[in-house]
Length: 376
Image (cartoon, rainbow, N blue to C red; front, top):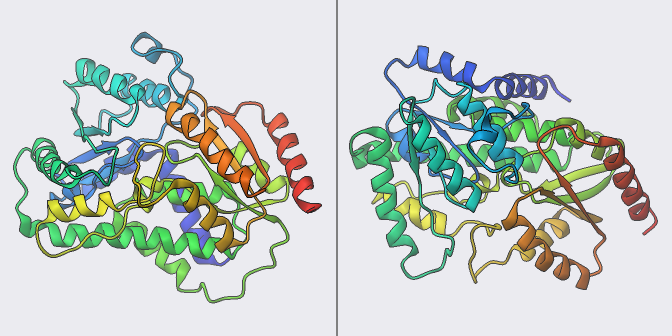
């Protein structure tokens, strides 16, 4: 890998290992500006940037959970439990607000718990997003909701004239993520590295992230190293990530993850029109976004999206990597498996929690899957 890639990876790993240290450093450079945390899988970043703020993705960690058990059920997913542990132990005290998208029962519950117990530390607000993207009222409803949330987190209405630059900034952020994903499909990038680089896009300021990624893409024309691993697609990771050691099992099994839905909430939302009513434009973009387990449309089906990834990248199989206790993903799984089965595409289902877990059994299953694919 080139030096620009190594610099990008080192910066991303440093930031995601301690995102609140980056927040503190950013706020010291931007006195009076707000840092707004957000939970998966998508909240509109444009109003935050329009007010000069910093959006900060809260994606959990493998921190031992103890305090959080007094506030939420233990059968919630590991993302909800770990971010709640971090919040209630003071790790997010440097934030000015946290935005929750109520995409599942667990986030609705934990958002209310945070509002009840932590509102003295930072503002807790819900960004209510329509689940049905092609409904007649979806765009109108979301436009009004965006105005409400923007005024709530910023303390005042943001004038439309502040939005074009913010919208352009987020559009370029998506372009950088898409450009990196295209580059990585042709290069032997470890799956854990891909996750770290995409995760950092939700922590670093968009300008800083774009500068780093552009350095990598500027030398993307360099010949790629030969890839001998078996190409596969991974789906089910739009909300949270397994431990990096789990991700390394893919590489050790000889599997190359050439496409995925990591952070698809941000990546899968098309560019927003920069001119005109900013709230309406953001709403229109969201309503055209890629289908996921928590948002639906009759115009695009999730299995079609996965099949397109397989065909475009000439993948040999698919891994459904589903977080434990994630009801939306488990509900989607049966339908997705049936569509994949009908097309006789090899697939395997793995479940996981945020912590390290049993990598030995995971390694064995992935190695067996790789051997099956190699015989086809």
